[in-house]
Image 1 (cartoon, rainbow, N blue to C red):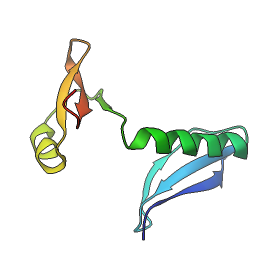
Image 2 (tube, rainbow, N blue to C red):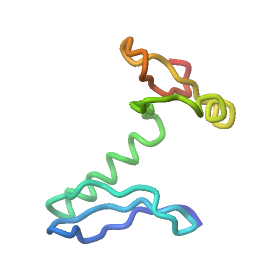
Image 3 (cartoon, rainbow, N blue to C red):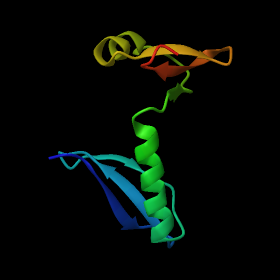
Length: 93
């Protein structure tokens, strides 16, 4: 089964979107949206970005760069000259 987006009530009102893997594992939880309409718009924006968006690595270390690059065809490229940060890219840019 493919993963899915799930609309849930936010603890303090509004709505959140959970990204759930095909095995039922929670992969990500969104910010709180003020309405269901806004949450659905967030899902559509996420779908648009997911296939082409770069992955910005703002972590302090890059200990796992080689395994990720090797297994997923991604590489770390400089992020505006910041030595400790980078952007994951799968298109060579």
